[in-house]
Image 1 (cartoon, rainbow, N blue to C red):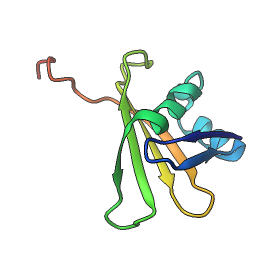
Image 2 (cartoon, helix red, strand yellow):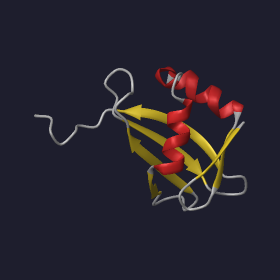
Image 3 (spheres, rainbow, N blue to C red):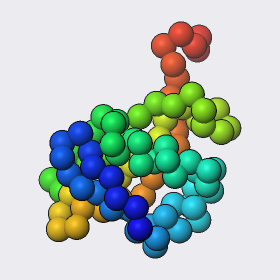
Length: 98
């Protein structure tokens, strides 16, 4: 299990079971555990409109594989505050043409 504190002072856990889930569904993050934890520590976040305890943390990175540009981490801030999942996405950068 890993623990990090976000910018708002919440201690958030990533359990071994959730890490296995992330790797099973998003294997491209295998070498990016630190990136996931950094996203929670220093990234931006948005609260779910449906579930007030669910937050999406996100942060852009230049070193992700397969042209991914951002890591998204879903966190449940209730009781033991834990990461549900994480995944990479491709977000067009402002300087890229369409």
